[in-house]
Length: 62
Image 1 (spheres, rainbow, N blue to C red):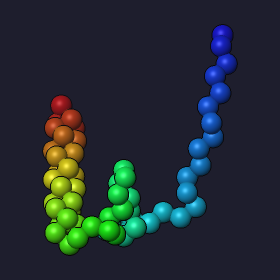
Image 2 (cartoon, rainbow, N blue to C red):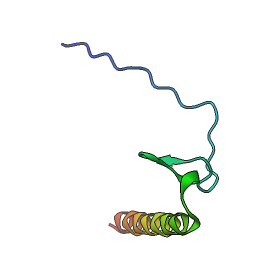
Image 3 (cartoon, rainbow, N blue to C red):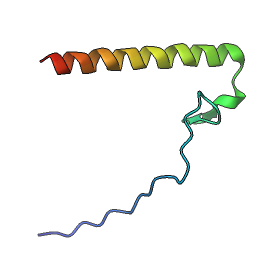
Image 4 (spheres, rainbow, N blue to C red):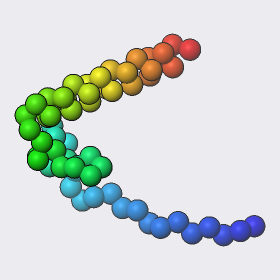
Protein backbone atom coordinates (compact mmCIF):
# COMPACT_ATOMS: atom_id res chain seq x y z
CA UNK A 1 0.00 0.00 0.00
CA UNK A 2 1.29 3.43 -0.91
CA UNK A 3 1.24 6.37 1.51
CA UNK A 4 -0.03 9.66 0.14
CA UNK A 5 0.57 12.95 1.91
CA UNK A 6 -1.77 15.88 1.31
CA UNK A 7 -1.04 19.43 2.44
CA UNK A 8 -3.13 20.69 5.34
CA UNK A 9 -5.61 23.32 4.24
CA UNK A 10 -7.16 25.54 6.86
CA UNK A 11 -10.22 27.71 6.51
CA UNK A 12 -9.69 31.45 6.83
CA UNK A 13 -10.26 32.83 10.31
CA UNK A 14 -12.77 35.37 8.99
CA UNK A 15 -15.37 34.79 6.29
CA UNK A 16 -17.07 37.75 4.67
CA UNK A 17 -19.87 37.28 2.17
CA UNK A 18 -21.26 40.77 1.76
CA UNK A 19 -22.35 41.35 -1.83
CA UNK A 20 -19.20 41.80 -3.89
CA UNK A 21 -17.33 43.83 -1.26
CA UNK A 22 -13.66 42.97 -1.60
CA UNK A 23 -14.31 39.76 -3.49
CA UNK A 24 -11.87 38.76 -6.18
CA UNK A 25 -12.75 36.52 -9.09
CA UNK A 26 -9.78 35.06 -10.93
CA UNK A 27 -7.59 37.99 -11.99
CA UNK A 28 -9.73 41.03 -11.25
CA UNK A 29 -11.03 42.73 -8.14
CA UNK A 30 -14.72 43.60 -8.17
CA UNK A 31 -14.02 46.90 -6.41
CA UNK A 32 -12.26 48.10 -9.56
CA UNK A 33 -15.29 47.48 -11.79
CA UNK A 34 -17.59 50.21 -13.08
CA UNK A 35 -21.19 50.24 -11.88
CA UNK A 36 -22.34 48.83 -15.23
CA UNK A 37 -19.83 45.98 -14.94
CA UNK A 38 -20.95 45.27 -11.36
CA UNK A 39 -24.58 45.17 -12.50
CA UNK A 40 -23.67 42.73 -15.27
CA UNK A 41 -21.82 40.51 -12.80
CA UNK A 42 -24.78 40.59 -10.37
CA UNK A 43 -27.17 39.48 -13.14
CA UNK A 44 -24.78 36.69 -14.13
CA UNK A 45 -24.42 35.44 -10.54
CA UNK A 46 -28.20 35.48 -10.02
CA UNK A 47 -28.64 33.45 -13.22
CA UNK A 48 -26.03 30.92 -12.09
CA UNK A 49 -27.75 30.63 -8.72
CA UNK A 50 -31.15 30.08 -10.36
CA UNK A 51 -29.76 27.38 -12.65
CA UNK A 52 -28.14 25.59 -9.71
CA UNK A 53 -31.46 25.65 -7.84
CA UNK A 54 -33.30 24.22 -10.85
CA UNK A 55 -30.72 21.43 -11.14
CA UNK A 56 -30.90 20.69 -7.40
CA UNK A 57 -34.70 20.55 -7.52
CA UNK A 58 -34.57 18.20 -10.52
CA UNK A 59 -32.13 15.91 -8.71
CA UNK A 60 -34.33 15.89 -5.61
CA UNK A 61 -37.39 14.97 -7.71
CA UNK A 62 -35.74 11.81 -9.05
